[in-house]
Image (tube, rainbow, N blue to C red; front, top):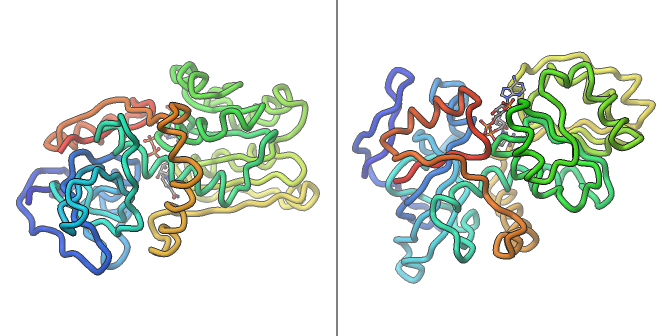
Length: 316
Ligand SMILES: NC(=O)c1ccc[n+]([C@@H]2O[C@H](COP(=O)([O-])OP(=O)(O)OC[C@H]3O[C@@H](n4cnc5c(N)ncnc54)[C@H](OP(=O)(O)O)[C@@H]3O)[C@@H](O)[C@H]2O)c1
């Protein structure tokens, strides 16, 4: 089959062997593959696949089942630990979901990684509840655009941080308040107070060190900080006095390295509680642009330049 391979940090199409199936796997003819920020790191050797996973880039796909024969032709979207930028992918069956009616393969490929990451951190780990004050950083990112929609209607104050040019998009996805990304370190706590009259209950952060002090200052009593990335550094100063006095919880997680059983549980929970909301139109993948698989490098360049709102997808 044809797939994208990396040579000297750049991507090109090449012929590679078909995936080897394991027990319980589906073989899927990939029609579209989502592009994620983590793919950029993997391309330059900074985010290697977990042991036993393909070293081909690509964490999510949508396509048609080829094997087993009994499921041939089913339209699925799936979370992968690697191998998405290819004509065929090996998919653990428990990580595949039926594509909601009316959604194209391109739209479907924009769902798994962003929405499952947001669901894991907001609903399952973060314990999001109705009535809470929520902050979503990098809110116009793929993950952020999913997070805003999952909080919409639950959080009466939903503060999004992003580049000012993306604020309108954040409001369209449910943000009630916005703050420029450069203002976060100095103004986050003040902005949350002005919006809610109190501190935040939940902050979803993928920016990292440069936001840490502001996040701790902006949280209210029993506030939770969910960290999923370190785009702006991994080491910061943690104010332990604030942590104690406000009884805060700081948690971190990665989706890719979780066990097959944990991913299966996440997919089950998401399928039962969130997937039906796509059919009703309440949730939508935010698809910025598609590229043919052969132009994967252009898709990476767009992400790297922060020139994307929501997701970009490769058409295979
Ligand atoms: N731990 C996990 O399980 C997990 C899972 C999925 C993704 N992630 C991580 O979550 C992050 C988002 O992923 P994605 O694929 O959704 O990303 P993406 O679509 O590429 O969006 C990233 C956005 O973050 C903002 N940004 C970039 N550098 C920044 C900085 N230094 N300070 C503040 N904002 C910055 C930019 O938006 P603005 O122009 O608005 O600033 C950029 O468009 C990535 O770091 C990814 O690795 C983690």
